[in-house]
Length: 404
Image (tube, rainbow, N blue to C red; front, side, top):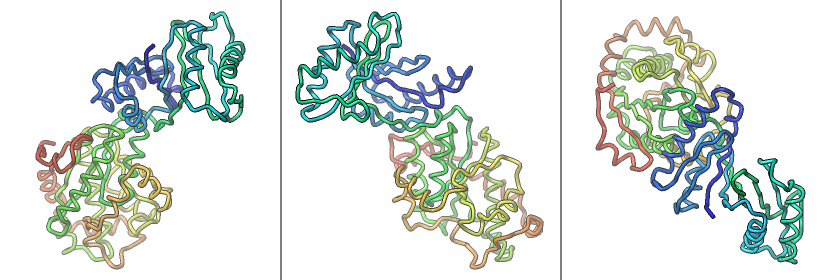
């Protein structure tokens, strides 16, 4: 008898001719998520992926699988020879081990191999009768039983399981291309990054840092938030953008009402330049419609004016509490509320324009040497490879710059 985990697909089942590519990518992501268990064998199939544990700790593997996008649900399964008497005895022993006294149960059989001599109704009745005969204090309940024993009849064997875990859903990370996420230290942008990954996007994080106005702790917080996201899609490149000079120039030369608009336009220009050099396809951010002055529709239009690149806002239609709920679920909320200033707040005007005009923003930008400011910032980029195994503080030792 072997122990396996049977992984079921969600959306992948609808991918038609592309299904094989999606399954292969999911298998790769599962391998990465469980890489500490080198003995695991991953066996992709058309309808499932099977993991042969080969002695790997089942509980630890289950916890890893819960965060892999593309998995709808999964179950630890026992692989038995396709022999009725062996299966009947095993099912009785299995239920006996689940403290069955006073509980309800049902047998749910699926016959994938229709050449097997007995049909599902017969198997359900026979296996159920064996359990009732051995455990008289248990009762049958078809609709909402406390114990469900699932039996899959395959050509080579029986698969038997009693537990079903919910997966993360979505699409395997990497199947929808690569994007860059504008990652601040706030609540919204890590949630946006998580939601982008759920739709299969491989992300790289772009963070604007303005020392001495922003602290090393603020930078570290952004790296720690990025590290939280790695559990859903593997390593993430963290790209630190020096932004002090640009903010000082804007503060000196742009009227207060347009400070935020011009600042965001410069951020978007830089992010787009990074996207192009990193061969990414789109820009993601954590803007929520109407939440602050720079997130009105008028502001978005004035800011988007600097690029034709798709800008995707996964949390645009969510209210703050909905975003907080997701942040708590993915364990970024407590980090996000640490009181370290980011570069969007240090020069925040007291009365920003909520309905800025793109032509006026362009007029004020003419007072700046935009190309030179952008080039100097690009020359100072710092990249850190954030992994799930090391704290981001340890990873600072591996930081390199100017290699975009």
